[in-house]
Image (tube, rainbow, N blue to C red; front, side, top):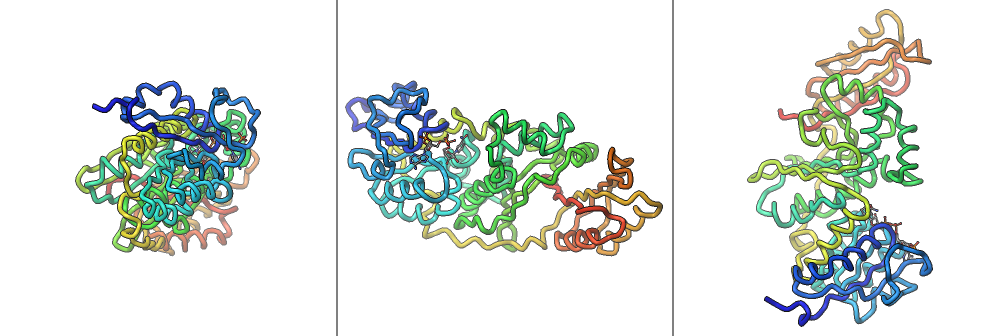
Length: 439
Ligand SMILES: NC(=O)c1ccc[n+]([C@@H]2O[C@H](COP(=O)([O-])OP(=O)(O)OC[C@H]3O[C@@H](n4cnc5c(N)ncnc54)[C@H](OP(=O)(O)O)[C@@H]3O)[C@@H](O)[C@H]2O)c1
């Protein structure tokens, strides 16, 4: 066995010293002995960069070389790896990663937006230079899903990847179910607790989950990342009433990322969906994330854990660093980028599934019959229905929900358009897909 102290150390520069950056430096320091034994060489912090040098970050970096400009650090001759923990798909983060790769340095990043938008070009550059571009922390935080797809499940043809990929949304939906409070109120609480950003639109609008899903779809199906091909809906329109109706039917509402291979191409969707409460994803609560992968040989594998936060995210960054220290350098998207096929989008309107429709019906005799007739006229057949009495403050409207039999999405969209103009329907109905049922 090699003596780690005799081997060439791996010299690491960390750009961005916020939540994740500080967490990475803590592990490098606190587990230095184990990391050296596990990698066969020492992992040395050789440079750091952030905006404010004077900020107290709870880490001792007095002896580490400071760079005012992270781009200069990315070019420094005496560093082997740059860890990019600044964030954002453009600007300094992108420049740092491009410069580091161009200068023949390995890169580790937690930046899903950057990989979702520029992963292919960055991956090509990494391959040209013979270095790693590792991003385990970019998807589902502490859950080792990238390694699972790249290594443990690599022998399988993957048919679907379905995940709860945004802890903020899962926390909000869980709290709405537990307390019966509505979205806006629970979001404000989540912001106060630090579970949601001041600008929550990337999270609650489904964009953050879509970045992660696009990366997973590429790895799972051997295609180029196609963020533009992800159909995205957020959780903003889901109400506590919808959640309680879904519970009565035996489902939970979750923001899901769904990537599925079909004969027509690849489906990539992020949206709130009804999940039967008997399947593992339905029971992933609070800020937790989970990913269910379906492989032709292995069947279903479900991984669950913390999708964000200092410890879990830094844990994933360190796993990438250990790979590099061990000399395990692989193409960033499992197969060489030149072998990745363009992603062929499966047309959304041919998707076949069951749907949940929630609407407010006018409180008049015959309104329900008129609404169900309108659905039947469009070819939508109803399996179950619940109607409740008028809610406080809206005595002229009756909440009603339907679960349909299997229907094509195009048919549902036409029915929805009819309902939006129907004289007995108030406001815009909410249509959610049912996912995760065995057919
Ligand atoms: N936080 C999580 O739980 C989590 C989970 C998964 C992935 N990620 C990803 O990890 C990355 C970092 O997230 P974070 O939560 O650690 O962010 P953060 O706490 O906001 O930290 C960002 C860091 O970047 C530094 N920075 C900003 N602009 C810079 C510039 N122009 N040059 C050099 N440094 C600059 C900041 O410097 P100052 O401190 O001096 O202001 C700060 O130290 C993001 O890509 C994020 O999406 C985060």
